[in-house]
Amino acid sequence: MRFQSKNVLITGASRGIGLSIAKAFAAEGAHVFMTARSEERLKAEAAAINNTGGSACWYIMDVASDKSVKQTTQAVLTDFGQIHILINNAAIAHQELFLKNDASIARMEMEVNYFGLLRVARAILPSMIEKNEGTLVVVSSVTGRVPYPTQSTYSASKAAIIAFSEALRGEVKPFGIKVIVILPGVTDTEMAKDIIIDGPPPQKPEKVARIVVDAVASGKKEVITNFPSRMFIILKKLVPNITDRIMISSSKRFIGNQK
Image (tube, rainbow, N blue to C red; front, side, top):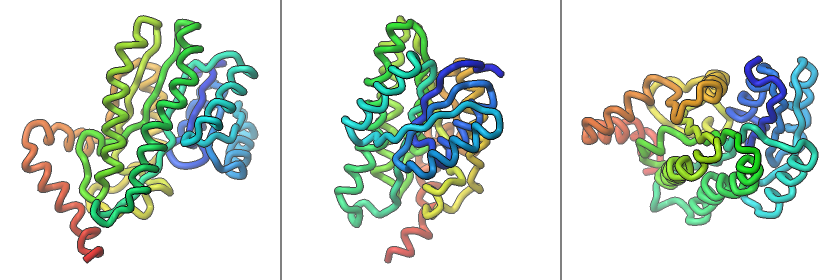
């Protein structure tokens, strides 16, 4: 019970990695505040956590909306006073060749994945600074370090998240606030079910969640969630041409389907 009575707010918590993170923190004694756009799923999943002895509340929040983020975060802080751990997990992903991809899709990926993170962080960080404690966890992606063909705009949004987090870390460290970046590889979630990638089998979201909980407990700055992802990042630094060939090869099936 490493997080007994700690308040943890999670975005994108109705499914996938976010839901698994909510369950993992609840199992460690935390009070989890689950946010997403899907009221029905949030209610059901929060109830399931409470029925198994955990502590979960749910709030509707659209990270792409200034109004929604402001209203929800103010409600949580008013009701509970403090957020000890903020998990910025909400994201959308789209796979398409860049020249076939509608510009509106790219804008929405950036609006949710990058600007959504900024909105929530801007709403919660002042209260953490006031308390001189807190942890901001940013769920990015290995594609933020090794961009993936056919997901150029998604990769760009995840790279922006990493750059923002690394810069922010230096700004909030004097106030006792930690910033942790999580880099999952391909994960077996609903969001990834239509993504065509020829490579290692996807990891389970429960594994990613356990890694997130351990990272917060240990205070690590960055965690790569599986071995293939670690190898890709190392290869990208050492032999970028070989890495590029591997990534191109893994996307050939999707590219071939588009011809």
